[in-house]
Image 1: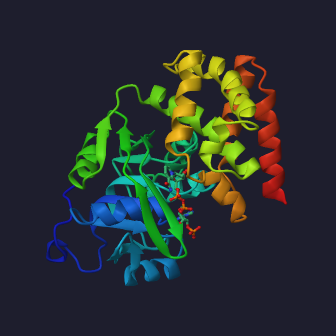
Image 2: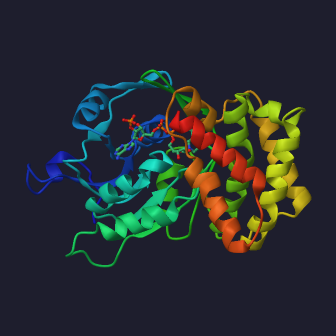
Length: 311
Ligand SMILES: NC(=O)c1ccc[n+]([C@@H]2O[C@H](COP(=O)([O-])OP(=O)(O)OC[C@H]3O[C@@H](n4cnc5c(N)ncnc54)[C@H](OP(=O)(O)O)[C@@H]3O)[C@@H](O)[C@H]2O)c1
């Protein structure tokens, strides 16, 4: 399981190298992570197609620098010790199948929404028969930010990246590349806190087409408060470490701190793309149903965002 050091180290020229790290999803966040990591270790970037891999190999602007990615197409994947998944939530199962083919020790999602179960099922179902123990598959969280403008990726703010226990090697690689990273022993609680914020801000920003900060004031605030009020008992029962006032305060603080930002769901709606509503509100509605809780405002925003997607 030796990290790739140079092409001369390969036992055979036609054999694909084994990378210390691969990133599936050459979008805004994937390229932001890959470009910084590639300054310290070899990073395989998995693109959606051979054409896209060729473009990434030729170079893409990430921030102010040209990044010539070590890009691979789904049909010609190298092996990798660790795989980070940064596709949109709706593409998680596809990414899981690709990750399994890279025979990793572990697969880490840093996506929004709760995608861990879909990713785990896809990775384990697609594992090559002769493989030993199954790879660890877990979801961390990140508040790093980046956006795509045409073919250019612009980092939009440093954040914190929290990884589950078992991913210490990945934390080390990310830290060395300059990302603020730590292992979070209660990663499930951290995921719920991020889900709470996404549940409240994303659908409303998308439906009303306003930047995050506007949601803290009338006429939107009443809806933001309703979403938090309905979400809190369910998430608290699942382990969210905030009381109800704390939950409201957390959501408002994030909306204000990112006041000028357009939430990713708003960007998706404006671009006519599929949103991540299934992995955010959809997953929450399933949780609420199992908990026996009413969540009418979440039902309403879910239906409306789905109607926009369909239209
Ligand atoms: N951007 C941020 O600031 C930010 C912050 C925190 C969390 N996140 C989360 O991170 C995830 C990625 O977000 P993003 O903004 O980077 O999205 P994005 O720019 O849309 O990038 C996703 C990339 O995945 C690629 N892809 C989709 N299916 C694939 C497949 N089967 N194989 C290989 N590549 C595939 C897409 O290819 P195409 O271009 O061909 O579609 C696209 O390049 C999302 O869950 C998001 O919520 C983003």
